[in-house]
Length: 607
Image (cartoon, rainbow, N blue to C red):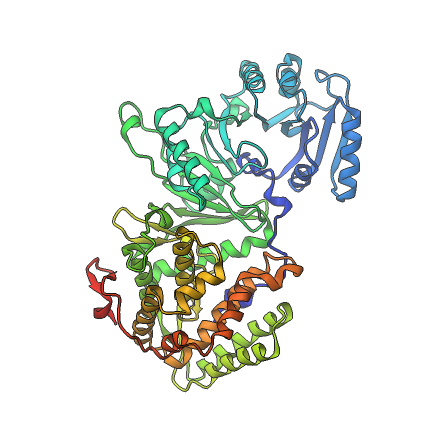
């Protein structure tokens, strides 16, 4: 039980911003393992650190000896290996062997436009690049854009393919998304389904981007785009997925040839995944203007090998869930292929289609899509409930004690709080009846849910899934994230205050949770005595996960640590007593629950 959770090392600060969250454009290259990378110009040291993990040698060439000296000192300070500096006087005569570079990266803050206009440099690029190599550069100003097009024309005249040209976000800093510049239909998908943010500002930007895509003006407005140039002999379409992905999918019998590809590399952590969105070949004629674009598949890829286990687990969990069919197969992704390239895991899935949950919800206790999400969690728990052996409750107690001991090594609890939590865990071991284990999503926050055109919830991101997990944890966590979103839209951003108002005092959400607990426990065969221990240990587990995103000095201010302490402080409140005893004082008369068949029933009928 809790195999994924117990195998995780909850070490503070291990999921903070990492160096491998940089230079995400590298995932668009045909291969991620190269013999030699040549940088024409001096990239930031953080970029060199990433490139050095991809190649045996990274060579930095510049006509500015002072820049090279400064870069050399910085890579020595960072202990970056495999990087060599090479000063030159003439870009048209580089002291390198023919076809010796797998990647040529043209960069530098100064004189980039002048460099791209250099006809002699174009001939040198043609000489240096190996048979399967790639030239990459970005432009951010009008002069650089004009010079970039001149370089593209020269390289095409020398036998290169038409370039892959991509518009990128944000306008400066590390790349987070890259989509084909001339593919307005794919851009519409991005602004509708990918770039919907929490803040009003980000949502306004997404709406503006969608409008520009619909009018065909986006390509003229975006200020940052990138270029990849390949040999004509590679026969690679400009919008094609990377070659390494095509090859890996083919090994599993999945043909991705001819598909179009965009990349989302959002998130600042090494643990964040890159997500490729794959689309069918563009329709021709009138259909191209009227057909609504939908991704055919998505491919998730790790940034660092130490996070491969997350995708490995997601692949196993999705395959098992598809086989068992505890919930409608249309409410979660179907796995397509899995494998590794350059030591990094890749998981291909059939795309699921819907709008972000936060866009579709009414943010009320009676919201139909929120109630469908709750019903989905309840159905998954009840359908998968598998009573453990007679000793199951004691096994659950032992597993939770392992987590508790890890928690105690990280967080500074007072003695009475320590004793209280230990007592809650011990209470599970005293349950005499069989204890049900359930199929658990592990991270059912509102951000991991979409809503289909039929108003059904689709649950994504199963990296933390547990085939033999604990009941109620998914329900508690979803309710907390939903309550937080409701409060945010009402103008309150204090997470502890919001939680207290929604669940530690009489409220519409408290009443909804109370009625749902009664239904869940009855269907799964869970004793009421287990509710309180599962409630408190849920927040203990979330605090452990949060610790990986906090530096040691910030642990005491962690959201879930303080939420747990707040719940312990309020342990004798009437609100918690009513939750844990399954006693309710009434129901939400206007609440509406959508059953799996799509038939609506009131909470009274479901209680």
